[in-house]
Length: 473
Image 1: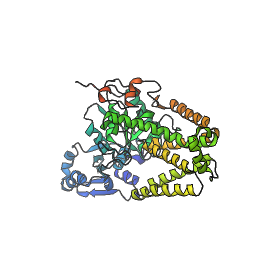
Image 2 (image 1 turned 90 degrees about the vertical axis):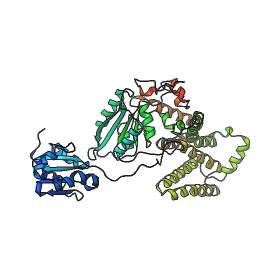
Image 3 (image 1 turned 60 degrees about the horizontal axis):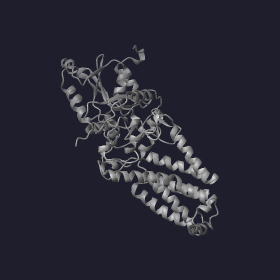
Image 4 (image 1 turned 30 degrees about the vertical axis):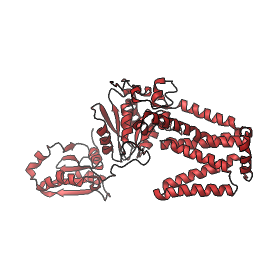
């Protein structure tokens, strides 16, 4: 490709590109007629010193040609390649009409630490960090297979973040792999800075409140998804990776389920699905019953409820909205404040405001119990993104229950089920294994069967290698 005169690959043009960049360094070695340009904040200083500074400070001009034959010196022919290489942490070396790039990338970053959002009691505690190279090493450390393939591309018209697409050859469906690559390459957006942001840009239905791709900070979860036939996407500068295709019920699974006895794992999954029902219906049921269906309340409880609501001046739907909104404010305040202060705000705020609201006659004590139970149930869901979606859906069900009573609540749940049935993840059904019905997948969705029975990979992945477990007894 021909370059225009103002894009000619030379030192002056590259310096012009980085004009008014105070953090770029231009250093000259006059004895050997060589210049280097680099960002000191993006390079590993020890590597930079041993590979570039020391050799160029002690070399003779007649030895340069032999030095440039070493593999770390990569010659480039276009100015865009040189500029992009410098921005990626490489050092550009100008010698006459030749330009070389040397990879000395090594900025300071966060060390591997436990995940703050996906903590487990039993199992590994390391989590992904913001460096894509480190995240790849965490996966390679667990998955020693040459069949693990990595495709590299970039997103962001301005940021140009590196994106790595991982899959296991002969296990992953190549149609899904090609579709992920096609969608990511088709993204035209200025800045993509996080995996959660990228997932919204190439998911099937961006207007749904439900996440269609699973995001995780745990390397062990990412490896388990790869082995099951799914595809992993890593975004540089993001500690979360994207797993696809994904089903709705995957968000209720936790790594703890596999690191403990299968009976305990099954009990925990049943508990989470029960918590889902409580989270979406408890407050809405209170609004429905106290507004239209007093006959559903036992007589012994009816007297208590009537006394509790005797001083409340608002209809139940307003009362429920007030308390649910207050709970969400406390949750958001606790998340934004420092950890120790946030925990104090959550506990003290919930107790003080709840008790004061009951004494002031703004709400009934029965509603406080319902709202608190719904909030606790929503926190049982392992995925924070799905938990937030469930809490948002709860407000819609409260409105419908306040307008039409039990009929509105049933209609709201039906609309949610219809919406979920219409969602897809990379073109596959979002409610697998219910629609389409795949009975063999139930062993690892609604329960956690013993490993001896988990012999096949999920049908949603459409893997060419279905069998994953051959236990010899």
